[in-house]
Amino acid sequence: MIEIFSISHKNWEGNLFSLMVMNRMIDKKASTKEHRKFAVDLFNLTWSFLDKKERTREEDDKMVHAAHASRYHWGEIGTPLEFERGEWQISRVYSVLKRSEPALYHARRCLEICKENSIKDFDIAFAYEAMARAHTLAGNRTECEKYLQRAKEAADQIKKKEDKDYFLSELKTIIC
Image 1 (spheres, rainbow, N blue to C red):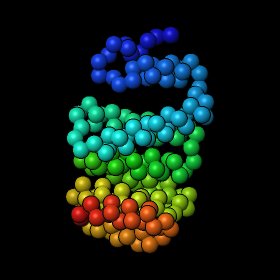
Image 2 (cartoon, rainbow, N blue to C red):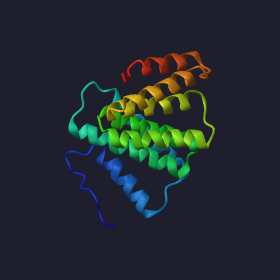
Image 3 (cartoon, helix red, strand yellow):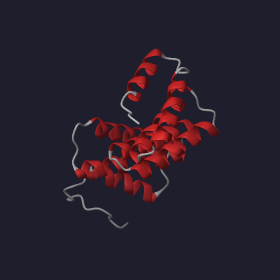
Image 4 (cartoon, rainbow, N blue to C red):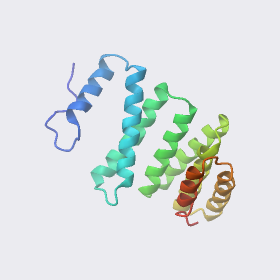
């Protein structure tokens, strides 16, 4: 087996774990349980970066890679619900990094998956939120306003009060 990364590489967090994961993936296909663990852990890692007030460039890069890697693992074993949530998270990452083109792409994918699979409640509301946020970033005021209105309408369908309250607090951060 070829060693892809050196364990002494200074800028790689979790070197040993990463090597073990890569070796496992190269040696044979990961199990459903492994894909699920990687997807969840990487999703949570992405959130830990999103929650930071300040990040280094390296942390920004890791955040992007973790979000995509999480979505990859969900793509191997998940359902459309996990697919759209992964696309939403990737869109949010790119929005935070002020990268409009990939933010729009992943927001669109999130919305498409929701519509194709009749995914409702806060997931469809957040798909509209992602579209509004990405359009704001791209300078598309009319599109932002359109999706912000759809997000507000979708908020009325959110069943749990705490989910609805959280969603509405997120909507307040979008200024078209």
